[in-house]
Length: 533
Image (cartoon, rainbow, N blue to C red; front, side):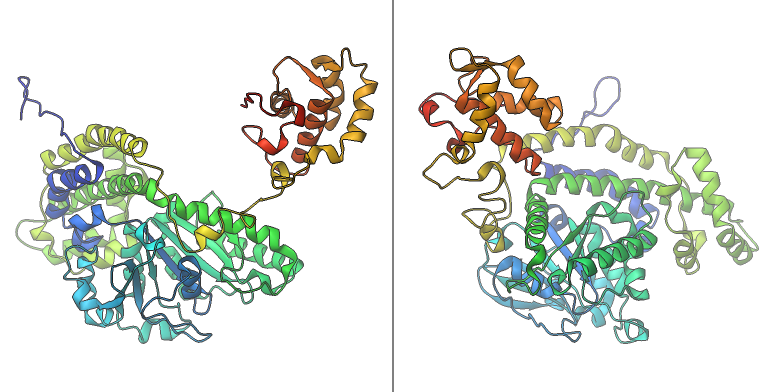
């Protein structure tokens, strides 16, 4: 459809997945296809890539607890699972939801149009014999899929015994997953050269990366501090980003802690990691949108590189000599494109990898620059993506709160073993007596030194006492709002005791509640309407 001014009408989309699929097929794929993007960077996207559930990729050296971590999340064994101190998982296992428990081998998996793995066919039989899908009915897998990977070996074993490009397969998965979890063993922290190489291969996906320092209950607090410091130092050298990657410390299996000193730390870290994983279904559409933008930017750079090389090639003689010269001067071509098209240096592919790939290409078959193809992608980035972003927000608002449920996620959320239960503002939640009443006599002593009138102290009088806590005014203001239950601008003895209790909660490092919990409402105020900010 065209308007009178000759411009195309904007694309209309029913939902985000359909919108992404159509934009890719109609606008981005033609550019990728013309400039051999799929030979150089990544295979074409399939319909299943836009519809599949969020995926979590686990990567680590052998015996860091990858398979045990998956079992801990699901609280159930999965088909094909093997656990041991030696390198046991020698396959890529996609753990996915299915009505029947069973295993689908790699060769059958890559011809299934409903699964997002068809393009893995390119890695050949050596890989497909080491790839399978474990299907099973499990509540956790209704929301996410998990990819277990072979333990990264050390030395020549890594390169020789695999028979396929391990780093390239990991890179393929990294492009399509929502979260990459790198597991390290706190008991034997050693980052081999091969593991460093793998982490560098994932370098464009730092935003998806999280680090788990597992088996942290096997060492003392002092040793743990040293191990954590060593890990951060090592990662800083491998992952070249100004931001520090998030590290979760804990013991991710359902066994008693060997050294229980850091139990509270491990609980808080597990809670944070679980919340991060639980947010994946909610953010899945946004992640796919973000990955499509990344892909489009790289496809544009690819078009400029290929068309520049085509332009420089002679029409008759000396083609091979010119090809060698162009490959060795690729850095200069990058600089020229960067200046001419105002492209950030970070958008260019790795120069060494690009040179290796160009060596086997026939430059005479490259396409010249086709402005219409680039205009279509620019239009997609400038207009269509903005409309899809609005649709993402609408979908998020209209859907019920999506999060991962079942397995270990259930045990960590509710009841007395939920994180923070009975601590801070939750202290006394299941007691019959008002918890503030325990310390009320000492608070009363202070209350009566403030010369209450008609059994109440004014805001000015309470402020003099409350500022002694040295908490910021913003925090004290919130405490005042929570403690002034009847909203009369004064505090009686119970409300004053409550204010002091909330100050104590904050000073002990806990968060204040957004609304006053029922168990903290003073006995004389129960049955009233209680507001909270």
